[in-house]
Length: 383
Image (cartoon, rainbow, N blue to C red; front, side):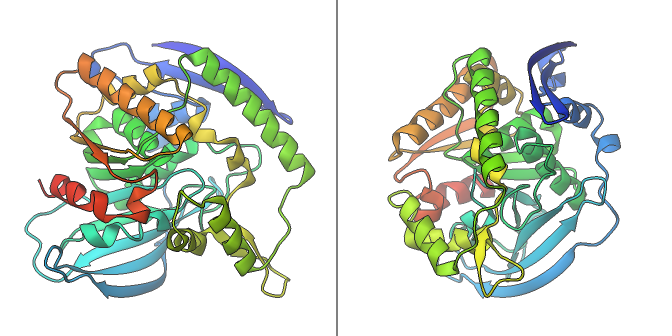
């Protein structure tokens, strides 16, 4: 095993060392690691490093719905839960549990863990999941650390692949199941594939919705970008630790304007439902709930396309790769790199079970026009 220390960054009195560890044994036994000492310990000794408390999740509220159509005769319920991670981690994971009801389940399907993208939240799947429901099928759409209703990471840490992977792994530990299916969008798709490549035996299937990979051709370029982005965010936080509170309507108008042409107004309203927090001590004033450190686009700054392809190569579960064809230039380039990583991995590992699908729509097609991708995902999950 060799260690390649590729960046050391100082945050106040804290120094974070980002490393990549690669086990050079056979392909099936490889465990590809990235992003820090904690993540290395997590991958090497996950049971020792991660301990979910025995506290039961706090059920906040539950609702029942029906999607009984000719194509999808299932009803479903939605329950909000909070998964406490104990004082050793200092944060909680917020999660929406979608359970298919009605009819009879024909099989014991593994739970499906849904991983959203950068600056989104669990509500990004609100329009898609009803179309994927089956009796007995359960989706766990959770807010990544620093997003939505989940807690922020402590000030000395930066949200990155470390937090994304730990979030997925803590969901796995909470579920206490041998296998899961991963459904990820954008940065969440990248994290899902990397997790599936790290723990291939624990993954049933993987679905990626317009997965992205950074526009970096080599490790040096990705490290350079990461360090510069880190310093930029340090400056932003030093000037304004928290944005000024404003009205809910003002935040809604802002997100609709910023995401115009990318996310529909209804999609923006859905994301806003988990994307703001009421400010204590004010008269009905709000601010965005995401961690300001997310502005550095953390999950995108760590891997080259070649590094990503190594993770892809180690995935043993069937993969469905959906790419949106009507993207903005950045998303188009990043999603192309993601697919290139998959294709390169397929060339090296002939046993990879991967399907590619081009969907009509933009980067958020699953939220804007879920019918464009629902059938192909349903077919893949049902197979």
